[in-house]
Amino acid sequence: MIEVLKSYIVENQKNLNYVRNLQPQNDKWTGTVDYAVARLNTALLRLINDPLKLDEHNQEIEECQKIIYDFVRHIRHYYEWPVVLKWIPGIIIHYTGTTKIPRIKKFLNNIND
Image (cartoon, rainbow, N blue to C red; front, side, top):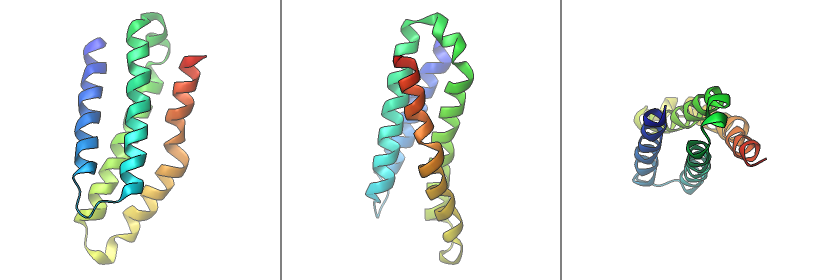
């Protein structure tokens, strides 16, 4: 399980670097991904130290990882799709950023308690 968590951290770093290197850069998206990755990595590091909690929160970890992956995937779609279709990933990015990304903060707060 520890190897899976380490792979999540490496994957998150790759996603973060991708968003940081986009041209033109969107500071809102970069900041959102940066905070989400930092919170998830902090939670993962705390859970690595406590294996009992790690088993309890396995499903939440996978859900948070999927949220970050989907957010970055839709950012890629936004930059790769034709101009006529950019509104579709734009709406999905907004929805994910306002409803799903806050779950990562709740997950970190849940671990801290």
